[in-house]
Image (cartoon, rainbow, N blue to C red; front, side, top):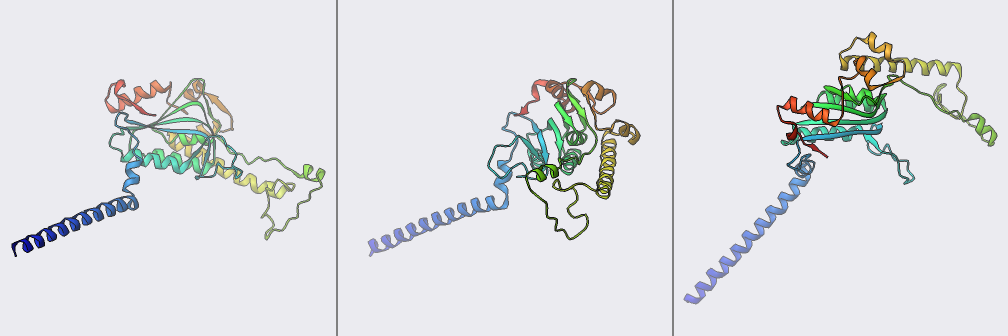
Length: 285
């Protein structure tokens, strides 16, 4: 009788242990699933700092493009480096959520690209929650310069190429080549101007008027945003906005940048802003 009772108690205990183990395993599996789908794991995986660095580095290189995949040619061929506006914003958010990150260092080597993507990046820099400085190393022209103007401070090498404030819609017309190759465009459009700007047909005088109208609007907006971001009179920026670029030394004279220098100048800027020694300023790269 006693043995039977003991055996029953042991059985109950074993089943209890098994049940607790199964429950614990279930909680663990649910927790992993919940973290993955709720975005918790994503937030921890995108941490910028490894614990030893405290300044996030955001590179702006090559063509500035509006979204992921815009730099692929569809043939699987290797394409030059580029900067995706959405990736830049993602990095800025990750830096703001990383308690170890104290500032953002934007490093620019770009001739620009999409004006919309450049504007998105500039606005992202303007609304960054951390101190942010841009360094133009080799080139910061056109859309890349527009992006840089969103930074609180712009530093550039005296040998850099800066500015090129302006817009272009130039393209290569293929009509003569197509005629030589025996090709002829068959135009089937629902509107008179639907296919204007096509490289496979001559540009009419009316179509040129439309494109030049748009260029003027885009140009004036470009000038306006640079003037606002740099706290300069629109008239002053308009005089510089002839599409030409200039060395860093001349850009400083024209107030397009704030200082001449290099990465160590950036380190000194952060040290002053954050009240740290320069040795304590460590870039995450």
